[in-house]
Length: 396
Image 1 (spheres, helix red, strand yellow):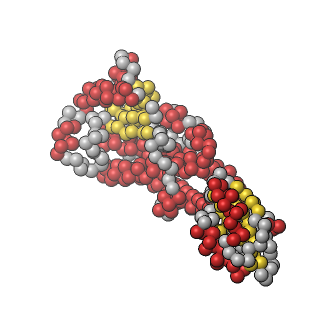
Image 2 (image 1 turned 90 degrees about the horizontal axis):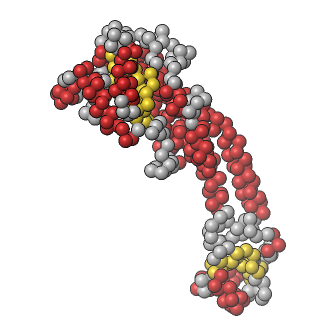
Image 3 (image 1 turned 90 degrees about the vertical axis):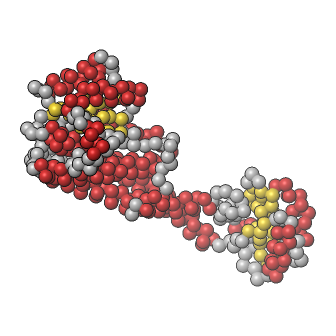
């Protein structure tokens, strides 16, 4: 399970007692969760009015930053293509895996100085993550365009003989070139009709050069045959060929165009390789930055909500619980029993005052104790496909 419950409860005589009580209820008796203390420094409280307003703002910021974290993670998976098993090992926070980072969380004093007001800290995070989001859109758009153009060229050089590019199949010597009267056409013939072709191609129109047809290339279903005839017979030949289920490709041998296509493919392929390394490094660094910012927002939310609920002076213990899927329901019951005295009117509050400002109440997630969920399962290959190129365009 990669789901964590970040909760807080007021300090008893000491915060250690609050911790011991919770541990006794959830682990010593019944092993419902793995628990860690979640260290939040002494932040500047400010006024009650500011805290109430900030609580709403932090809820929105939490959702935004989580969405950016997921976007960066998903795009990392998209860019790594065939190496998706390596995606998880690239999704690190401060050089460690996400579970380790969360369970050993330490406030980053350099990035988010605690001498600043809570509002200032939230604004620092907001600006930082907005910049990551904007940069991601720009980089994703550039890389996707490059990748899309390369895929289009690769598609032209693959697939059925009826549609694929013939530039890498034919050679100059396969054609009669620079003739005022003669031209070489290319016909796609089903494998089952090879004999018919050999018997009939000379009679499909007047002025077909006898014994001029050669098999140039085969795929699973068809063969590509050349045939030389007089230019004035082209339309007649194409019409009769169609009637016999032979497809004449619209192709003119042009060495310069073919060379330009090959050079374009080489250029795109080289550009993609050049961009790949720096892009993966950027994604790795900025995933870490965004994830760290997200967990700091969770810490801010716990602090603000705990002060609003439990009052001043600041005296609460923040705790990180990692339940298993089987124990979630039981753990919720145990925590409700343990902390119901904190808010005996919780049910009445939910029924009558869903919109108390600052408390972000919702019927599903209002409990007598402060609670926020952190889900580290940021990728879901089984249930959802990665964002299509159109998704990144829509985000711009």
